[in-house]
Image (cartoon, rainbow, N blue to C red; front, side, top):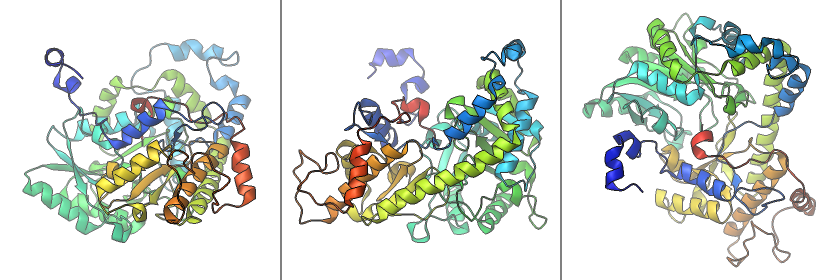
Length: 491
């Protein structure tokens, strides 16, 4: 806590809480950071299931790196390029990098659209790309409509330094949180009545936290809405390559090229990154792709404050220019995500836990409303605290995503190896069994989801339980390590 004198020495931004860190979303990260799980060193620690990160396809990346050592300027094979890459690069970025990213974006979207490399503006991750876009489109006090539930970091990324506001578009549980014209109109009207100028609509497709995609008719409706209101449409498509089953992903770029669609292309902007689709959040590669020349020009100037290092650009350009690798990676990653999603949701279903039907993302939207003592957000937070501190899982409560209904939790499943995932699944299953079997009493000091006891019969096969216990004795080279929530908490 800062005293009054310290506050007077600093700016309002430095002393305020605009970053939004005082949220259950970030509190879960702190709980993990204080007691991180490890299969050998700390098997009773908190398992990180609040990090939307794709670690399932790193074997494909490692295989490519071993075959292409010249892609890195820090290897004997690539040292001859060191000087040219290390010296000054302007904020346009390496031509090879922009060409490769455009190529990757096209392949992820089934080669049904084309992207102009000259419209690609780089930024420090999707966080920087979002903020840069808002700086270009809105003034302090202006607002963006955002369908709920939405990624908690948007409250930071879009508001903290820009002074912009977010107006929730309330989507209902009754229709699986789908975006409707009625909900958009209601949010727009409420902003007008509050004398708030709406400058744009932000949609996330595929959705974080739902793991769902927007269908063609919904996207057409969204374009019609923003065109009629003459407001901007910012499309966050950072999970585009995480779609693992049909129906396939449809980009806004595909919609606006349809002949029957009336749209002012100057209103359309795409935010992309390689953090989720390629699994490289540490590389901080964010992209703004705008169809508005003035926005491209402004974003490029602003990108000086958050450039991607030329060393990273060089490596990415080499990797994403390899069509064979790109095709193999996109297909391989989707297959791995589909398998992990099936295993995880099947395990939950066995103990009566359902999830919103989804086919994308690195997480599931888990429904625990039946475990709430009452259908309130206060009861949701109370349940979440039990899951964090007693079950030892960092899952994210729906209220932190501005969900309209209590009892939903985002659970990430792709940021860990199989053995860690099975331990996490066992904890959830055991917790659910205890709550469902009211006739069984478990002493609080020896919780069944932490250390299974011989006298407690759970709904697992003996073979499955043996696999879990054996897994706890093995070292996991990919178990998540403690990281600052400020560094890694992105979508």
